[in-house]
Image 1 (cartoon, chains in turn cyan, red, yellow, blue):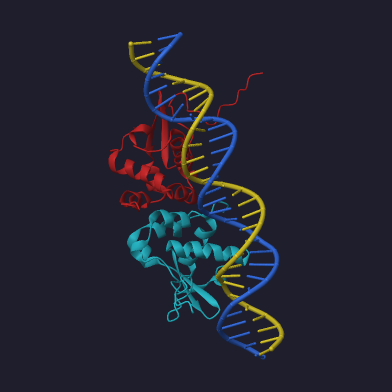
Image 2: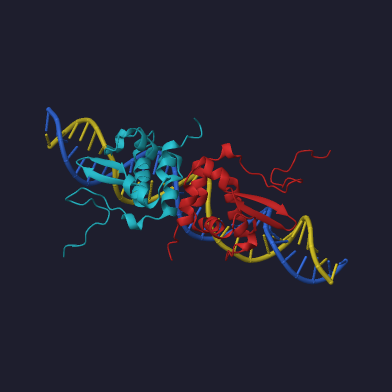
Length: 120
Length: 120
DNA sequence: GTCTATGTTCGACTCTATTCGAACTAGTTC
DNA sequence: GAACTAGTTCGAATAGAGTCGAACATAGAC
């Protein structure tokens, strides 16, 4: 008997979109928690500064960590609703959900854009 | 031989101020981390909404947790630079560092003020 | 088919956070 | 002095977050 359930971790076959919270489901505490890690803060800042609003594959961000670590952080960001991920062939293309975050938490992304890392 | 060092956790004898990071030392990731806990977010929001800018003792916030837990959360908030604590007699009087936070992270406290808890 | 590239999943480990009770300290009041 | 109060400190238990290697999956090029 085949399992007719849909894998809740899988990408939408039509759009390639991975599951994410809707705009109304965004939780401030979860977003803050996702952004409180320096590595993730750096990912989001790099996107905001250099990605020109385009989708960027994980590899575009030069993250000097093992692949499993990177996957973990992308997942945290996606589940908090900070980034949207779309599967295209082998790549997972990412973009920060600027419109959703600006609508729900105005000014927050500006703080991330202006952030200066501690050891800089 | 007496220890002439000053206890770095003690209140300033003159002002009663407990040690805290200066405005320039505030770190976005640390502030976000401090605010990512629902209990602490509630503390800060309660102050912003109801404290009228005045100092408030810990007991003024009706926090339904053991005393040791409350002490812990106040310490996290103070060390992140979110609140200032002043020892006055038996009480520890608290205030959110609105001017410092607005200067370094404009808009952040507005998000806290407008936050709606999950189970509300 | 093989090879390569991009990323996931799993399990384990470590480190940090959170929670709390019990004992304690220090003002205040009597 | 004793009693009360506001809060700390310590130690321990538990839960959670970050890190990583090894094995795996899948798409594309050849």
